[in-house]
Amino acid sequence: MTKGIEANAVGKSYSTRSGSLCVLRDITLTLAEKEAVAIIGPSGAGKSTLLNILGTLEPPTSGTLRIGGQDPFTLAEPELAAFRNRTIGFVFQEHHLLPQCSVLENVLVPALPTGDSVPLTSRARDLLARVGLADRLDHLPSELSGGERQRVAIARAMIKRPRLLLADEPTGNLDRASADGVADLLLEMHEENGGILVVVTHSMALAQRMQRRYVLNDGRLMPGA
Image 1 (tube, rainbow, N blue to C red):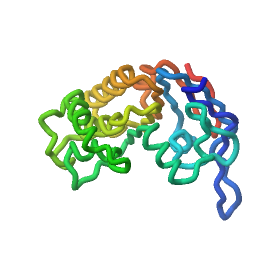
Image 2 (cartoon, rainbow, N blue to C red):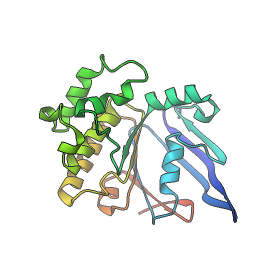
Image 3 (cartoon, rainbow, N blue to C red):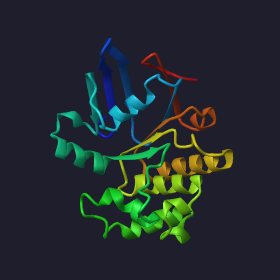
C-alpha cells in the first residue's frame, strides 16, 4: 500500500520529574487513499499527540510510521520539513491564520518555502471561491467570522493538494450551522482531492460522517461504532 499510511506499534512517552509518562501505546493503523476517518476520545487521551505524529510534527518513541511507503522520521530536518510541506495539510481548531496577512496571503503561506506562491495564486483564488470567500480576498482574519476563518484554513490546507489532510477539532469553536458548513467543505474537498482525511473531534455528528471511526482511550486505539 505505497500511497497510504501505515502506523505500526506506535508509542509515545514523555519524561517528567516523576518518571516516564506514556501517552500512546502500541498504535497500529492502516489507511488507504480516499479514506476519511474520525478519531474520538476524552480529553487527554492522546488524540492531538497522535495527530502530531501522523503529521510528522513529532516522532514516536517506539514503532514506525510510513506515509506513501516512506518513513519520514529517517529524513534530516530540512528534508522532513519539505516532505511535510508537500504531503500534509493541517486544519486546527484555532485556525492559526496570520493576523497581519490578507485572506489570499494566508492561503498562500504553505507555498512560500518552495517559491510557489505566484504559480499557485490562481489555485488559491479558485479555492477561496470554492469555500465561498471570493469577495473577501483582501480582508484580514479579524474582519471574518469564526466560520469564515475556518474556511480560509481549509483552503490553506488544500493549496498544495496534500496526500494527507489532518483536522484537529475543526468545528470545536463553531456554532452548529457553521460547524455543519465546515464539515460539508472538508468532506467535499477531500472527495475532490483524494488522499486521506483524518479528523480528531469530540463531535459525534462530525465523526458519524466519516467512513470509519476509531476511539482513543488511555493511549490505545480501537475501532469505533
